[in-house]
Length: 284
Image (cartoon, rainbow, N blue to C red; front, side, top):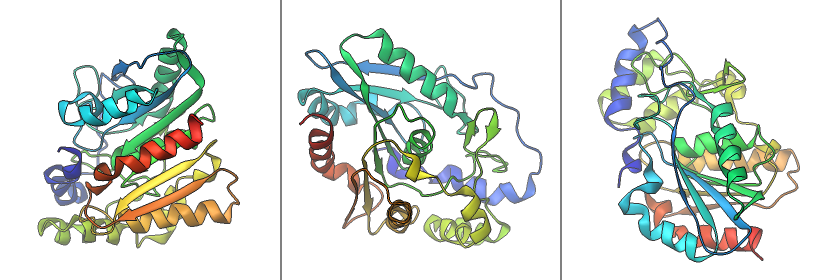
């Protein structure tokens, strides 16, 4: 499996070198571009699940190791759109200021070109950095009607670049506010303790407040899955923050957090909970 290691070697380099690089990198020539793969089920009016992988890049949901999960989804009458938003042939080489507008436009364009799809039922699903992405997307584009976030973050974090001084995401031409990596995070990063590094970043309460994703604006139900022993970042604690924010804002749609025994990858072992959520909220 690839996405459990989203934060591995690359982020160690980011934490080590980011403090010494001040100039923001140039935007990729592939900025706003991505690779997509649509898997259709049988029958009319198929709800569409749009799936994103994490910080290892590529198009995870078209890969062989996720084929059993794809097939399970298709067997339930859902279509799946796999999107590779960086480190693919036709996308940026780094997770840096990825255009939320471009992703949303691409999804809506593809959905409208296929009459088998029900454009009123588009659900976003992402893991790790992909979960951070889908929460940012759904909180800004009300045409998305639900979210499944595996090992998510409640804030936006820096781009996965050597500089680490730009946002992971861009919206309407501006960077989405993010929690920066401080110089102090270098020590745990050297030790390979990324959980501690991210936890230290989250101690910057002012930055967290600025970078917190406005999940209360999501126009549909939300399912969060996390591993209680996640060693990459504090996904369970961040999921709890999402739940608390939804409660504070009297979120009217169904929302639930399932925390399992296990690490960063454990949500993939509980996709039956995801299928049940999708079936209840979008098929029944």
